[in-house]
Image (cartoon, rainbow, N blue to C red; front, side, top):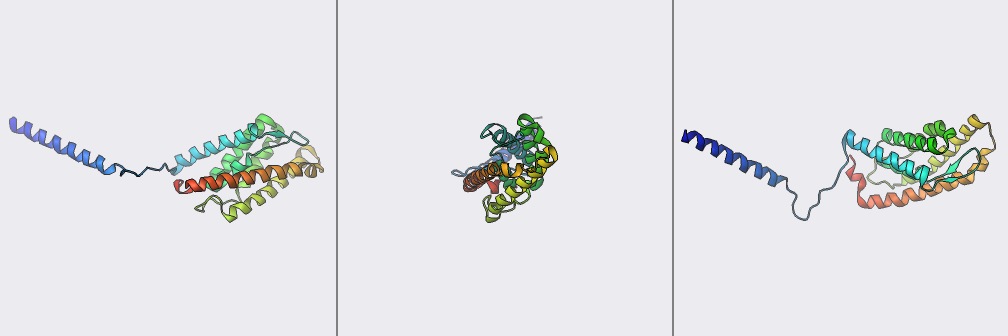
Length: 203
């Protein structure tokens, strides 16, 4: 009986020592900080939800300026769409753009909601999330292509919804302000995130 108890106690001590050694091996060395990474489908869906919420906030609430005819408005939510396009894989960025833009119009200009759901994901296409940096030459040029897609898309939508062929010229100054301001914000925020090394944390 005593021998059995001794063998049991010995096995228990060896197990505790092994667990302590494993925990010690996992401990981060002093002065080294663990960086949060976003990876896998769950991480991508979480980031997509965050970008969707930010698109709604910066489209429907912050910087929301009614402009022009037919219930249009100027906003800077496109800057968040550009960031999503440069950070997330394309399908996730397009989803964030469609849901974020569509929900914003549902709350503020529902007559444009269907058009927005169709147009905003197209703004993602010129951007690339494969670079190690958000702000690359290609992504800067992509802001110009996105402006053309947005202007042409909403011009066609205005024709279909309201039959107004003259709305393009009336809306052009607002489009330039919105796209130019969004591009400037995208570049400024993107450079800050590049300094933080955000692209290396998303896999």
